[in-house]
Image 1 (tube, rainbow, N blue to C red):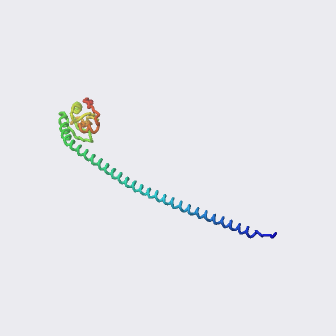
Image 2: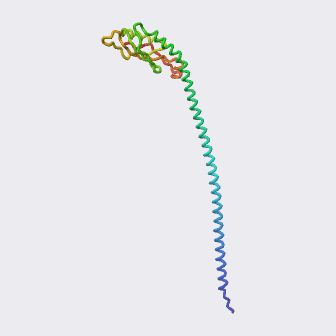
Length: 201
């Protein structure tokens, strides 16, 4: 029988299989690169879309912030306008109140008493003067308690200086009666009872 040498055929088959393996490996690597590049493009597109949405949100937030600032400015202007209106209304009311107050002070001053100083701080009144006697001061305090425009007399000091012939000097505090409009703003429906029992020394 003749002998056939199959070694070259087997060697060729191994080479073909090896080549096919490398081709398949290269194809797989190329496919993986294509898939990876496609995923990269997809993720980049998604990130770009999200960044665009974020930019839109930031723009909308800035717009809303500007609107809020404008609303706050309008609210501040409103409060200033209301404060000015309240001041104007208070001044309008105080014009007649001042006249009534001075007229009431003149009416309540008893004979033998005169003032050296009369000051007002808000609704607080301070009288400084001279009376012929402490009884005149007591009469003045009772008149303040019975007044429509003054209340709550409180004597700080009454003294007679040695060697003085003018009488007793005194310092007296009181409060101006709050008008109906001021009571509505200050109490908002809460009644404020004004007593007529002034302090008498």
